[in-house]
Length: 230
Image 1 (cartoon, rainbow, N blue to C red):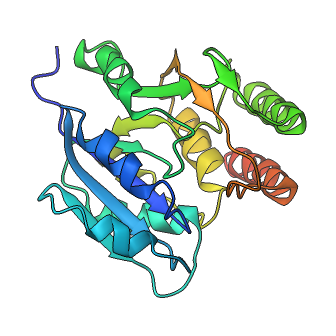
Image 2 (cartoon, helix red, strand yellow):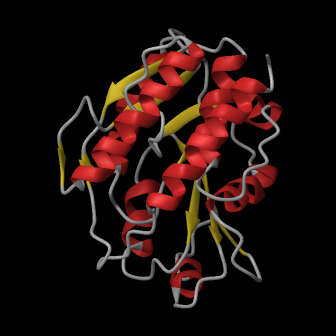
């Protein structure tokens, strides 16, 4: 059994004024959350202003002066993290913070040190068909090249020890941060436990940002990290 879990929740945010306060309210309500670090990636709306309106000591809000990408926002937050575990939370409410406790349970029991929330094991809605196909292909590439059976390597909900995440020496500044984390964990031989989560996707009209270009970049990242060890 883990004696104490102090969870740092990292929230990279870009133009999320419609949901940022609701996300923060829900995340801060979770009992294992030790601190929340929001990194506003030079939003053009009121994301940072609204985040700072939450006067909670456990909440820290930082801002980039220019847009640098999700990966860079995560790297910025990681340098500030004081908890012993990290969870990444998107600011758009596609992932439900109320499911954080069930993701932490296997870690609390000492079964594993890394947990992923899988959108493809759990209930889901409003996922674009071609996004589904793209995700399945990325999982296939990962599974073939790294000899594993992951169902959702692109999931935002990843929980891992803070020191382990720092040791990965993350460098990708955009959405390639997701395959980078997974590839580097697998190359280290780290076991990843997947837990079903609920996923309520949003549309591009609602602010969804990932595109087909990001899929191509993700494939490149998967190949790069695999080839780097051959």
